[in-house]
Length: 337
Image 1 (cartoon, helix red, strand yellow):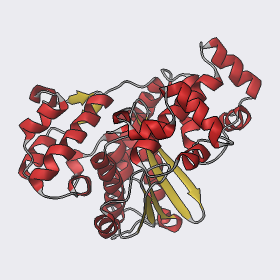
Image 2 (cartoon, rainbow, N blue to C red):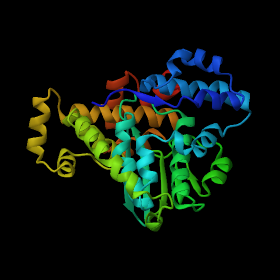
Image 3 (cartoon, rainbow, N blue to C red):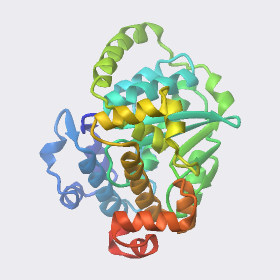
């Protein structure tokens, strides 16, 4: 399991204050202290999410704008880049940049980056490994905006996204269309940024092979060390999360993707004190809570995305997890962010 440490840029509080955000109120709402944001600040995933939820609650009222996340994500400066973004920025082209971002992001914080090529596009999505709730809206906006900003900075071109998909109810559509220059889909199963696949061949004007030669050996060594701490259950969770899009996640499919036989996968999980079904239930439960809380998808649509063959099966499973039906849970205070 990755370490639950999220680095926070030291200038973040200063930048938010300059935008008119009352930092004292933000920290009070998030139940954090200013000392936690000193040099080399590290927060847990829960603390990091609480911080951005507080910025959304307090900051947007003060700044009078809903685009704080977009503005912060788009204006990241070279000296503020983490090692994953720096390695990406110095890559030879956009495709290699995204590969490096996905490969090394796990060294920075407990967040995974997935890139899928299909139907003439590259779909980029992010997953917080240790999150117990959906990432805050501002954080999602900032992450997608910073990814597009990196592509624009690297290529030196005003690239546009092909599409963004958001796991939230319809809101701020015009603002998002202006920023990303593309179609915006709401009530999606995952948050993602889609680029034209041909854009992956765009060369980077920021390419620096000499700097990469210095950086990559150390990053690879750190990755090897971090990888040894990952468990098989962690890997199964990650594969399952990628497949929560309307497909029945059988153990045979997951084992095939992981390069082992179903029998071997189940045996190793049993040796680790868990089972495939336990992990599947865990991932489905988290995904169900996120979709019910953040989107307007009905229970039947959620059941389909989670791979249930019928609504009744999903309802029974959800009642076992939460003690109430999906509809009752959505109406309750429990589902509110």
